[in-house]
Image 1 (tube, one colour):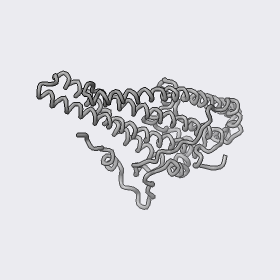
Image 2 (cartoon, rainbow, N blue to C red):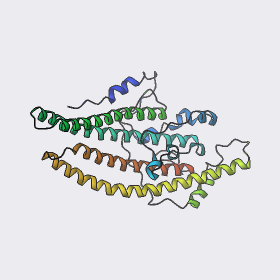
Image 3 (tube, rainbow, N blue to C red):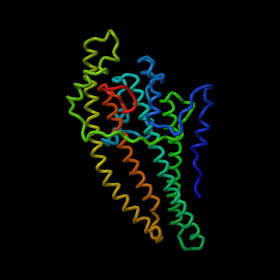
Image 4 (cartoon, rainbow, N blue to C red):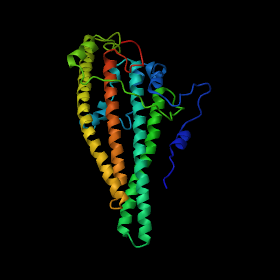
Length: 320
């Protein structure tokens, strides 16, 4: 009825033979295990000039700025690595890539779930069409719906590969695309971020300021870095406040989607309506958005931690 997932086979095609003696990644892979590889990554050891010539790629799903403010600007949703020491910057990169894989898997599951229902609906309509019980227009409509969902599922399969390739690169293990990830338990977070002045005072007194400047940096260089640091702290704080509003909206939407799915399932069983696949997809996408909000909040707090000299993840690094 449905096509078998192509992800395992396609991943194997993309992965070259592992270097002799290279340690393998744990399966399944936890976020803590992934973060432990940050310090050995070339980006954590390369010069600032070389790293600047090879900018990090944007995530596939995790666009936190757009999620928070509804304005498409992927660059503003990413950690500002030039203000952060290389090791915590790489940990932030790994967190972002790890969360992106989890979202890719949710997107694929959503499309697969909807496609299975859409196929059954189309198959029934075709059978009835042959008996003259359903119009060709109705069969064509359901066929178009099925093909649309099938296209989404294909994109989902490719997204799973894309995000895993980016995670493998962030881990310094491009020859081994991670298959199974452990969904992390996000650490508890304050209801609201501290005032900007509190954050700025911690950041200015922390290791981030001046750490990336050359010994020949002028007073103007240091002042500019402090200005940019304060602006980044302000943007992160505002993003957290905006994400809290998104989270409230999604809780309401999730309740509606649950009720809508129950209604669609009843009508589907009564063969009155054919939108069950769509309703299932919408419910799963809402759950995906809820996960995305949680991951974006965790990433924003992790960046605030990095900017103020604390570990980006509770089990990832040194004592604050």
